[in-house]
Length: 265
Length: 256
Image 1 (spheres, each protein chain N blue to C red):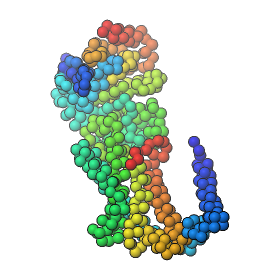
Image 2 (cartoon, chains in turn blue, cyan; image 1 turned 90 degrees about the vertical axis):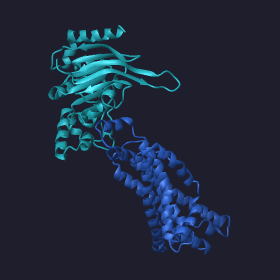
Image 3 (cartoon, rainbow over the protein chains, first blue to last red; image 1 turned 45 degrees about the vertical axis):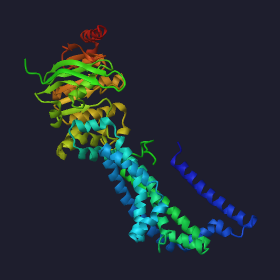
Image 4 (cartoon, helix red, strand yellow; image 1 turned 135 degrees about the vertical axis):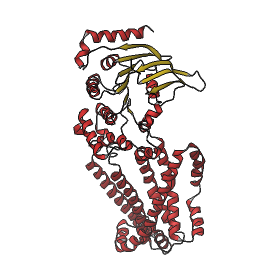
């Protein structure tokens, strides 16, 4: 086991290591290989950082547009996923009917689905939300269902023996038990919802971080491009840590119980 | 002779097995339990003692035969929330503290909050866990967790306390201590207790009567009255009367 202090050291070494290697590669590309496209292929990290600082307002605004839609879609998709999981856990028949559709739904590439959705709703914001929700619901439903199905029989027997009704069983046992599984699903879904929202940006939106990436790519402003990509990456990471934070808050007993994880979708 | 509180009549239980011979867990089990009696169901694994307890608790339906409790079915009694069950494992909810674990069944039974709090405090004292009320289950030892399970069942003040090998996972010292504690608690409440165990001295120490079950198929091989004086302390285990009962029950196994 490594302690908290060691963990921090590891993280700092990693960050510094990546920056140093990046800086070195950029130097090699520009001054040793003499690549004329060096600034586009791999600009110096400190240049990207400066661009980020200079344009932080614009990047933040664009990021906020994309992120907020992703968040709404994420919440929507989570609700749908939980509802589906509850229905499937209530009846075996329901599970058998619904599950193949769930699997098929994940075989349609989002890249193809997004224009279809846009064509139907004709609204960028709604498209972003729908696609983010569409991406989210599957890992949430699968993990939640797996949680609901993993409740030990004796825990159910205890409630049965005092004649608890179905509602109480879900309220007191099934939902709290499935929480850690749900959060596993949420951790998978959150960065995916952000990615989906960025993808929809690129389909011809007027705002959002995806638009910045696209414009920068076409207008040869490599530094803005890299700064936008970095912003996108941060958005994904932040979404993940928001879920982790929420988990800590909601499941205080989890922190000390090692090795309790749901299935990966 | 008063009418027995629980009448177990011709209970048989067969577990159907695909591609194989069905497992006969119990055949033709008959006995009565008096009100306020402490009964042990004793036998080796596979004798159907847990099955029998689960049938009485309405957690299982027998293949044939019937259980009548005060003239009602186990289901009626269950729906009236008159059972308190202690399982083989503590069956605690990880996301609830000790206090809230004990509280949970009372919430479902709709006991008012003030009463719940009072009972929890009383029960924690009873099982000696007053300093652990705000801990989570994973912070407790196995013996402590099992005591929480017992406190949770007792807090309901059940008319029928059903215990399924509650101490089998504990070491000998903890087990004997909890045996004595259980008798103390029982002597105050005088509820009917059905106690499943595979430990002969434990059954002798606790019970008014020991129902000895033998396996394959599960059936009653003897019912032994234990006429040891109460209240019983652990020192009674050193007396020759106690030893005689243990021997008598052990012989009844060798006889089959």
